[in-house]
Every structure is written in C-alpha cells, then in structure tokens.
Image (tube, rainbow, N blue to C red):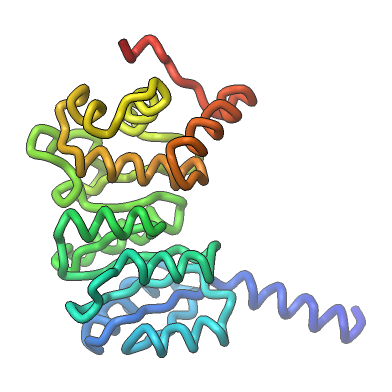
Length: 242
C-alpha cells in the first residue's frame, strides 16, 4: 500500500467514528450528557461547548459532527429561528433540543424549524439514552406528554413513554391519518375536528410529515406523496377518509 493510500484509508477510518457535540451552559449537565453518549456509543468522540457561539466554532472545525444537542435559556426569544438557521447551514446534522422548557409552542416552533428531537432535562437517564438512540436511528423524537392532548395519552407510545415521530421509511398510523386528510384538502382546524385533537397537536404531526416528505408546505407534501405512491414507497388507504 502506498503512502497516499495509507493516508486515504486513515481518513476513512476517522470519518467513520461518530462525532457528537453538546451545547449547554451548565457543566454538570454537559458532563452527564457526555457520559450518556459515550455509554450509548463508546467509540464516539464527544465535544462540549458552553454556548452556541463556541458550538458553531467547533462545527466549523469538525464538519464530521453528526449530532448536536442544544440547550437554550430564556434570553433566546425565538428558538425556532435559531434551529432553522442551523438546519440551513448544516442540513445533514441531527439537531436535538435539550431543555427545561416544555411549552407546546416551543415544541412546535422547533419541529417546524427541523429539529430531530425535543428532550426535556427532567427525563430520566435511561429515557434520554433511548431518545438519543432513536434519533440516531432516524426517528424524530418528542415526549408524548408534551405533544398529545389528554384524549391521546397512552396511544402510539414506545418504551419509556416516548413518541417516535417516524423511523426508517414509514409514518406512524396517526401521521397517516393526518396526511390522508391533508391530501383530501382539509384545513388544520378540520383535521383536528375529524380526529378529535387539538390544533397544536395536528400542527406537530404535520411538521413531522413535512420532515418525512422533505417538504416545506402542504403543496410540496401533496406532490411528494403522489410521487411516493406512484413508485410504491408509500401506500395510503384513502377509503379511511370520508
């Protein structure tokens, strides 16, 4: 093997090592999350930053980073815009909000901005580890307790009570119900009435559907759904919608 081939092989090996970034002002929580990540993925390289500015400097130096968790404080008035800017700059990066804020409006803004997960700091260690595992495997995660109305609690839940917005190449049953009604031309309010859910909950499901489709709005989602049905990658039973 030539010296150039050896260098190339070394670079490939280095690129294959998972790299994660934790952005959090609290050192104790950073260290705790660092431990969770290394327990979950022992070969991973985990970097830490006390704020977003430091985190962005690390991202510039380490473009191989595949997942970043970000905690934001009350000085950030528009977390959705913050995550949207990151999504535009790093489209392949898995973005995770790890925060003590649990307002549904925050969840919705973050999901619409393109985050892959919303993890409350109040979750137990095992639940945080499971959430990160799901996100790394392609899921969009949020706790069901923050996403659902009381009438939905207990449905479509996974281990530790989490909700997996999507995984691999499929939609959850609830997302299919929402998508079918979107394709039939129903408004968000009408879909909420059909499914007996809050409008905020429907918006969260729609945000997940748009992410799954790679769409920015209803029109693009409908077009992508048609393409996916034609090539057989999506099967919808339209008889389910009257």
